[in-house]
Image 1 (spheres, rainbow, N blue to C red):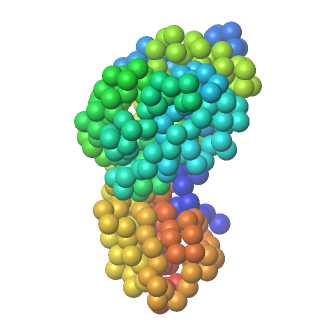
Image 2 (cartoon, rainbow, N blue to C red):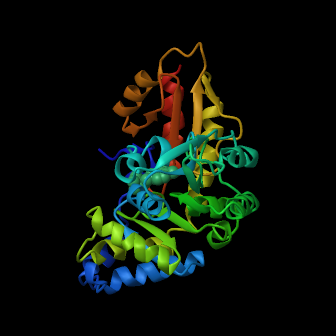
Image 3 (cartoon, helix red, strand yellow):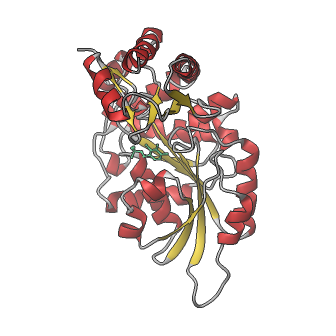
Length: 345
Ligand SMILES: *Cc1c(COP(=O)(O)O)cnc(C)c1O
């Protein structure tokens, strides 16, 4: 059965164009920096974000980990959102593998960290304190609703960080969703950042991989650490070839995913028992709650939808996140709205 899979944009399969590019990719040993396809992807990613260099990594989690390990020494501290992927969903890698101390700051509803909260979290020099080295922000901010952070906000965080001798890392797993939704270039969005991670494997539909981007010096160190964590892959141009197709042809179409998320939210808002989050969707994620008098809980609805070939991921017994991507078409949106309406009737 063909599923309509709205659990995440990580479920996207490589496009036919990607499979063809992968099959015919020129490859070499990437640990020797000899893979021409990887080298081309890295040059493209660096140029697109206006930075000196880039590194192809196995996953977004690996990219963020390498950034943290490069910016921070053991015992150093990094400021992170309390609803951020780095803090909640990366298996505690920074502490377990890097001895890095996370300092969580409350994420505001709009996905930002308040500037005064960041300022207050920066440790004064004192024998009792850890040394604050880094601020991490997430764009789009997933848990806060897939909400994009603005150019202006990112500039202010960059200024605050740099004025205090800190670096700024952007977890841009969905950076291009943020850029397309705001009609700005990704380069502008990350201009103040010292390092950026973005995923090829989510809305951009590549099967595997993320990019870490920064200065040449930063990437040189990150490359060393990538080898240390076992991420030195060999003829990995077969994967990078799909990433090149992502950057060439999958970015501008993200608008379609955002438009379908809007239609999905509009349709679901007409279904009794569904309460869409205020302002949702911002990009490709629709977040909503079940009303208190809804006849079924989220798990029961999930099972009913599954019988009809629709996969959804409940966030709790009363809350859903539905994610649109390039494998969801207009008919999939209509069928999903109808299935929710039938389930909640
Ligand atoms: C998915 C995601 C990551 C990590 O990417 P993986 O490739 O799944 O390791 C990091 N940050 C955010 C915000 C994400 O959504």
